[in-house]
Image (cartoon, rainbow, N blue to C red):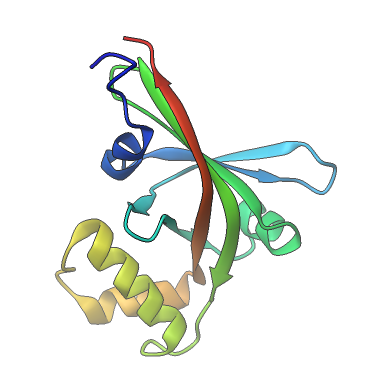
Length: 143
């Protein structure tokens, strides 16, 4: 694929591993590997993360974030920027916070073999769902 044919949104939608950049309290970037799901129709990126980690702390203070993904051969990349919101953590395995994580999982990976176990783990691990409203997408294919 040449750079004139390259669509960074396609790379975002195909990638299941990326690097999320959030902003630390001192203004420096904080980078975390994540497993994103990009919904092209709504221009939204979803990432499941754990409450209390640097990225969740940073997003609660400053919602600005960027997600970068790289093609497997390393010769193309795409970045999405926007504001993230966090849902959760939930305390009820059937509450709205956990339902949001179930919906994310279904979109990203399909059906789980044991939804009761998944729901229990989401509560026990204090998982939250980041929803990044994509405001800008850019990238390049170098070859």
